[in-house]
Amino acid sequence: MAGLKYLSGFGNEFVSEDPRCPGALPEGQNNPQVCPYGLYAEQLSGSAFTCPRGTNKRRCFQNSDGDFLIVPQQGEILVTTEFGKMMVEPNEICVIQSGVRFSVNVFGETRGYILEVYGAHFELPDLGPIGANGLANPRDFLTPVAWFEDRTVSGGYTVINKYQGKLFSCRQDPSIFTVLTAKSTRPGVAIADFVIFPPRWGVAAHTFRPPYYHKGGALPVKDRMETSERTQSSDNALTPGFLKVLHKQLSSKETVSREELVQRWKGLCLPAEQLDTLLTLGNFSTQVNWMNFFALGCSALGGTIISALKFACEILSEDPEGGAARIPYDLFVSLYTYLAQLDGDIPQDEIDSFLLSLQEPV
Image (cartoon, rainbow, N blue to C red; front, side):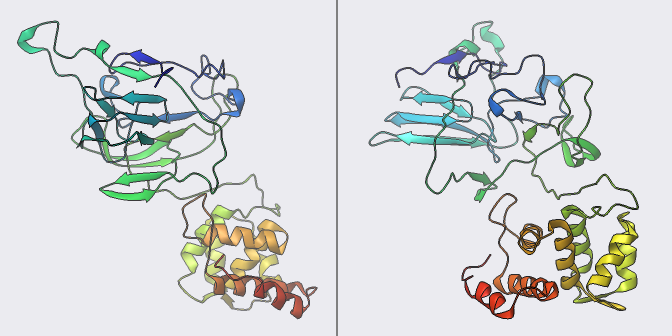
């Protein structure tokens, strides 16, 4: 494609920015508090981020299963990656490393070969007996320069990720400080890591913010934990994260004892005054209907019934994080009806009318 530009090299660290947004690359900082053009810093790792320097691949192309080697035999293909565009023709090859989001456009009849490797990245072979000038040299490889698009797509974008031979909808994972690790036989590569995601103060200026989004080769399993600026007299100590923890601990039973709820509440260092308020509001005795208490907890977070239901959907939904946050219709009806009737100012016919207007699962 006319107009495409490349940087020469293999295994290099490249720097480029789209000329439409000069100054987009932060200078002197990996993760500034305010990025140019309202952007957000992101790091893509082609290796475990604790690997030794010689094998640590950051801000490189990636795909969750393995590296792709694409060899066109007929027809040219336009490969659009998160880093830029590449036009690949017969007698050329294209390498897309593990983890990179990309799309391929073809023009007419097209065929070729794809090789995928697992567990390691493609690299140039050792030179061996032929000396300094091998059959493949870093300068023979081209890397695209930075490019972006800013357009609205009807229905939104769908990003598909391939992992262990299957396709999934995938979202970015924030990855940060390792607390515990289980080492493997490869230096710097862990079998499993336990990490946390706290905000932090950096020693450089303009760095008070959560660390950049990080995509790597490790399969993430994460949950949301939160702390709040709270004292024993705070009225807003409960957070969505704490309520989600309580729900996981107590939702296996329809009713829980008041004593158990108090112990779980204390275990999260939440103020006793707020628990007493919720128990009194729900008129609970020695046994507490958990979903009713959960609904009251959501109302403490949101203030209004609509806000409370929004929190309930986000906490209870099995949709991917950032998705539609749907919950079963019957569950929504139960939560809404309880809060509306407890409110006392919403007529029953208005409650029924609202519920009848909901046909799809929410």
